[in-house]
Length: 203
Image (cartoon, rainbow, N blue to C red):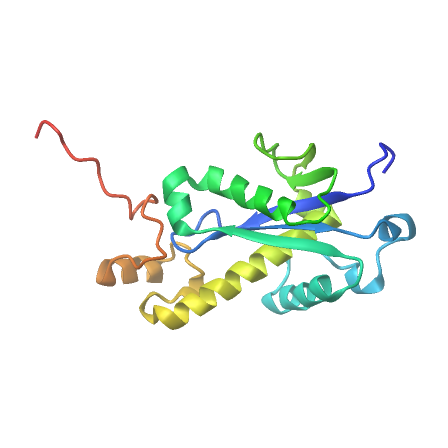
């Protein structure tokens, strides 16, 4: 605000590490009045999604998406995109897509961790930003809840993998299911242990 920006968004993602499903990104713009006057009571415990219980995340998701004056957008990159361009580039694409869906677009972005070289906006990178910035924390919750819901729906279609339990992460149960059933359409074929070895051209 001191630099003259009126619209700045917190951006975060969920789902870089799993073996299945999309990577999801969200962008959130908080009302300027909250910065000037303090966070409303209902949002003062807002925190990094990893520090909240599933029930708390769901409660905050509802508050974030239903509060007037709070702007948000969510985007995802599917497993096929991740396999085509790699997980880092797919994550950055989803973050940019979320920012583009805010209308009008923000002037500046706050990102968790290190700078995103391909981000479409000027940015400030904050180490542990999801526990230091309310807008990044809100984005982390939207991304996490959206992806968890996506994986719960995938569990209905492919129940043999247990996606509702592990959300696609490489747990022992998930790895055992892959051994028993092989991959399904939402598995990331470029990730070990799903990645096929390169053929021996001279064998």
